[in-house]
Length: 154
Image (cartoon, rainbow, N blue to C red; front, top):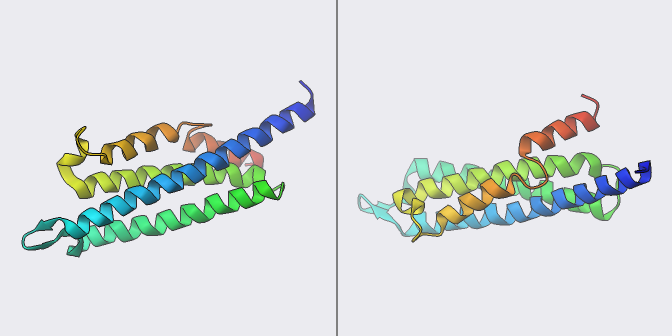
């Protein structure tokens, strides 16, 4: 292979990383929405479980993470569309962060739903499974962090 071939392949991989990051943001947002809707409707001890401080904090923390991941994915898409040299750094960063965020959101969704979320009758486990499998596409979060470190010379 020639150096130009490697560069083209690296650009392809960065585009794939950005695309997966965007997909993961959508999954994380859907898992968060599912958890919030359930927390509003599920009643325990005479009140909606969403009124309990622990549930509120889990949902609020996840919301902040999802919005941060959305920004990372948008920035990756922008850098890719502009053919910016920053893409080499932003793509693995977005992929790693969005992978971690989707997994955390899916895990939080299952925690809010409780035991039913582990059954095949409930769709919450599908987000969890998709988060786990999507995190491995085009390198795990750790692989992408290592790639970013090597690209910036660490």
